[in-house]
Image: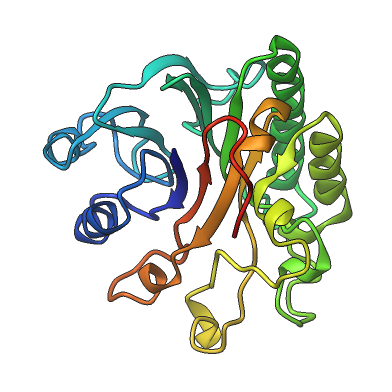
Length: 264
């Protein structure tokens, strides 16, 4: 089972990029973020023609998340995190697909910090941590996938001081990510590539793509029972290099059958 996460940065603006990648990569499950469309604008028909059933939560101009399943319809279980109802932001969606509970998230950016946007980022992350603990406690196979807007460690960003004051790198956010992992979640990419430099996002400014000045913002976390099935991963960098591309690249993992041997 191939599970991917992809911040599309505007699904209506870049439909050809998404559909071409789906046809080429053939992921079984896809978590999309930053749709930037209302529910009415979401291209459900085009994705159905490409072979994908969908559930989604849209928002005009901002945010928006969706889960796609190849050859089947995801069973929606939740939209929104418990405790975040005071702000109607489409940042979280959850569905059952082929025996796995898939959570797709788009965490707040938090800039500028300090300030109310950073405070909201920390609050939202706390709600994610609380809900993630409930998911772990339920004992079901879960994938928490999406754009966390956190650079977990210094090695997850190119050598620079330009991001020192950025919300993505602040100690409070990194501590929240570490607490999440401490619940029992496994960072799938780091499990398979503990020593590699891995980037999933390259800002449009200052020629960061051309210079490979990237950050690792997009993560797939696995519940304990899925870890033995983790077989391999990939970052489809060529999608980031396409014309009119998103500033993120798709990131994916493959889960093997029970007892299959892990490989890169």
